[in-house]
Picture: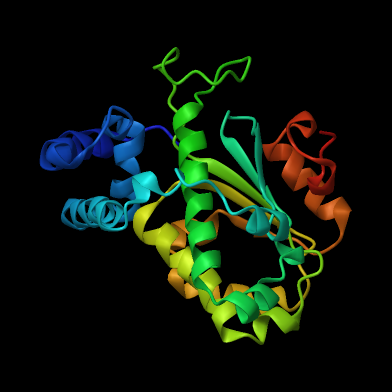
Length: 255
């Protein structure tokens, strides 16, 4: 996350005073955490405060802090795999997902959207938990409590779209579940994503992205890079962000 401007430093002080009663733990009191809300609302502190308070109320109303306690559904883990097992060059957790192979349509046609939406919300919380655990050190230790000087408040996504087809787009409930995740991220996890690299994107992905884009802030859209199946183009972009030892072979690494 970029350093603070003088204007942001002044804004942080006022913002902290405004929302101190709503901050549940030490991590949420960090400048690096608070600046996310300020930047997400383009330095408008009234809007930033409203956004943060709504997010905290959302967590309370939906018992988000308990969402991982029941564990993940093994069936969904098998059908919709993802991994959080590496770090980028700045020490941020890397989420890798073979999204193109996710058959969301078939699952929702058989089960309805609720279980899948819950699984996506659990994924967002798993990412948040990974962010809280990790702080960058040269050894990439999980050491939030040991290294207080360099907090980690963002993550990186590398998504492989191989296999994504119009069949998925043809089911509105499947599409809506993805759009709901985008809306949830924007409203309640703003500025958490540091970078997103989409690889092996077929032409039809542009249709889905066109639906997602209006739900995203301009800041989010700017962080997304989309590549076709030309590995010579996407591999340098991935390795610029992530060391190959930190990411699986499917996504350009050697892990």
